Length: 244
Image (cartoon, rainbow, N blue to C red; front, side):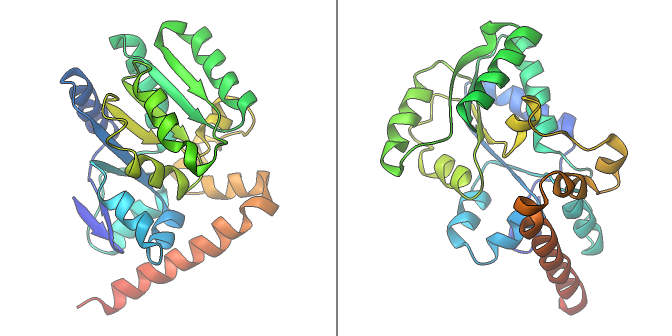
């Protein structure tokens, strides 16, 4: 475990993370997972509710390559990036291999339905515990959590923007106790559904995946990436230069 800018991060590889998740499910325990990237860490500096929701999670991975860079600059090197979408894809494979069931929650109705159809064809509909789009009122949250908990799901993926998904999972943790693994996956459903194209592997490894995403939707993503990333770099360098 390391800490970067008030953010706790477990120093794990993808394989180590998968093993922890598999063990938790097989033992019938609940594991609350979250990933952090540059934008989320910046938001956590002022959003104390988001900070609490993230830092009190059971398992925290570094989703962004910028976070891995920051860990090295600050002398707390992380082993590797564990991208949320890659973890989700690996866990769907795990669900197929181990007869686990998955609930998909979030995105627009046509998107989440396409995700379910895609994985049903790729593997089997047997892995699907249920699905629901990500549009709801605050007062509906507990009923949704109960529905998911009673679905028989071992794994829950929540594809809703921050900080809504983190706060939903944190505030409804007790209601979701029957689900062994819960995880926020941001815009991953859009990628699986083919709505958004993922960056080439070389861009992912070189830390340029954010730029590829920005280029696809500049009007929507400019603030998150250009402003958010600039703030993150500033905060990291400030801590590196002025830490005691």
